Image (cartoon, rainbow, N blue to C red; front, side, top):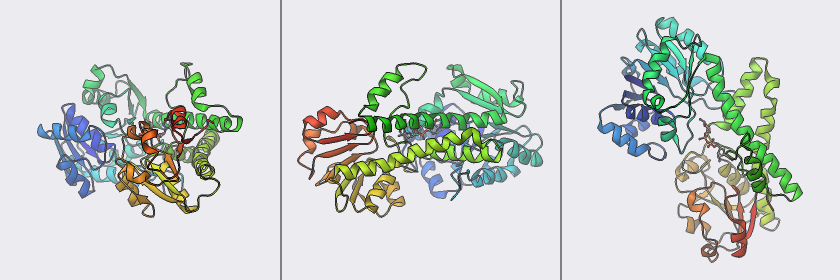
Length: 437
Ligand code: UDX
């Protein structure tokens, strides 16, 4: 099938490559010339495990092309909209500029029977609004909402092997002609057993907002427990193990630490609250304000703990922050809690050096005032305290004995609760985790 993918960022580039891998003829379209020229040469404009190999593999088949020319969408039966919906500046709501621009640019290239398939995370009501726009130009084209649930760092496998597919069609019915077309698009994952649900437009849009809100709530729940553990001398990691054994609760997404960040969870819960407000249902989501507040409090707590760890003052202290990305196996620094903590420490007088295996270039663009050092051993040299803030494998497996001679003072704050506290203490380190003594 001929498919166009509009927007080639973290979502669209992976989606385009995966659609080609599934056997379709794909054109990826983006307004960013640099991104398109990188992708055209089978280079990924961001770090995502397995993406470069996949781009090389599918481009060799001739089934994947990239362009900045939207007219290349003409002739495709399915047009995926994969552009970003960032938080509006100074407001909680989602900025719909890119979705609206993509849909509008697509209009002259639509033919009868075409599907415009939204994958971006959008405020409920967007699909109905875009359907009106599309119908005004091409009455025989359809809008479908097909939310994407991929996790950065696992984007390729999440796209090729989705845990569910949701098709939101205008009448919410299996009989809708778009369903058969999307069944063909996703033939391979469906044959492999991926469940698929057909819903109406608003339900499909809300599935994504609800899923991300639930995940954010789960993380903030365990971080709230961490606060109580800190106040009472309990250990949040043992508490999470114990409650996670109840399979109604589950251990996943119960890792207490510096909280969630990234390009999705923080802005999605805010956009969801803003949209509920517009719909007169704001009371239903006031708890998300608390989820957000608990999450942001973690960052302040780490700054306070670092001050304690350094003997009561941050002034002039050399702090090394291990990790800049919002999570491991990604170079994405959007709303990264690690960088926000690093910047706060620097503002309060510490001399902060940040290291990360992949995200330093992006980090330096956002926080040019911080110092960056790609070599971990150089970064920790003569440090007064180490802060593990993104749990890359290389930081989880550091040898506490080997690092002793490099630092000025053997102090470590484990912002992700991934180190073996006893081992580090036995090696002579002052160890602090979050939500554990
Ligand atoms: C998320 C959703 O998981 C995904 O389904 C959706 O499509 C996009 O948003 P992503 O942003 O890639 O994916 O990251 P995720 O793995 O969900 O982690 C989000 C943040 O939560 C990270 O900063 C991570 O470090 C943090 N986190 C996660 C915790 O602090 N504790 C946990 O237990 C899990």
